[in-house]
Structures are given as C-alpha cells and as structure tokens.
Image (tube, rainbow, N blue to C red):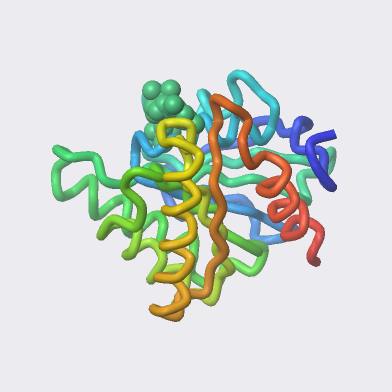
Length: 203
Ligand code: GDP
C-alpha cells in the first residue's frame, strides 16, 4: 500500500486542453502544481510508486494540459496533474491559455479537496508560486507544499529551510502545511501520502 488510499492503483484517464474538456465535477480530486522543472512529475511517480505515470503528462502536447488520473475503479477519487508554470520563453498567448485553463479549473471546483504544490527546496516560494498560492487562497483550497530535492542539501540545512519557511508561512498567515521531500531518496513519502489520502477520503 502507498498510504491510506492505495495511490499505486492510479491510472491515466484523460487530458484536458480546455475548460470544456474537464472531467465532470463529481467525486474527490487532489491536484499537483509547480514550476516546470521543480520535480512535480518525479514526485507524482514516487508517490504513486509508478515509473511512468506522470511521464504521460510530459509527452508532447500534454504538457500544457490538465491530466486526470483515477485512483479507484470508478474514478471517484482522482489525482490531477496541472501544467507546470514558469517556462522562461513561452509566448504571451500560451501564458494566457495556461491562466484561463487553471483558473477555469479552480473556479468552483467542488471535487477539488486540496492542492499539493511542489517547490525546489533550494528556491521555494518564487513569485509564480506565490501567485499559485494566491489562487488557492481565493478558491479557499487547502495547500500542502512539498519542498522537494531535499537530497540536494545536507540534512541540517534542509531542516533549517523547512523551519524558516514554516515560520515565514505563519508570519504571512499563509494557510498551508509544508514538508521536506525527495523523489530520488524516497524522503517524505509517508507524510505526503497521508495528507493526500486524508483529502481523498474527506467527502
Ligand atoms: P517537473 O518539470 O516539475 O515535472 O520536474 P521533473 O520531475 O521532470 O524533474 C526535473 C529534474 O529534477 C529532473 O532532472 C529530475 O531528475 C530532477 N529531480 C526531480 N526530483 C528530484 C529529487 O527529489 N532529487 C533530485 N536530486 N533530483 C530530482
């Protein structure tokens, strides 16, 4: 088992390139967001104990889609891979498309119970991450932040970053939880799966 809900059962359902292609808003969803290259696909693969699940979201044409994975047979519980943000050189029209797709998804999405935001532990809370958190706050969504690639720092340094970012979050009244994570080392898997399982079962 990969936590209270068996995430290893996740399979790809469908990608949505526009709001009209989103799955019906029933059941329970947990979404994953993050800057491109932050380590979102690796985190999804580690959490679902899958070598290739999120690679589907990385195939050409799908990187700018919202990709849905079902966790249970009836697809009542789903993981949702949001397109990565922060590509350096994309045209304005592509950025606008991203914004309208993700805003359209967040708008009144009743099945969305929580958002996992993936950030590189060495560069957490960039301006675009804060924008994403702002959207989550406006939509009154619970947020859990994975500070990933923690293996790139010494254990002591990673703990320091976690502590100082937690204090900053409290100071700024950001309503979120934070943890260290590493897809390559399997660090923080239980904690993350517990949070995701908790959301997926909260209906
Ligand atoms: P995405 O664009 O956010 O989906 O990022 P990817 O999952 O594709 O990861 C981007 C790069 O970071 C790849 O080269 C990964 O191998 C690397 N990476 C992802 N997670 C980790 C991690 O936990 N530790 C280390 N050291 N590298 C990672």
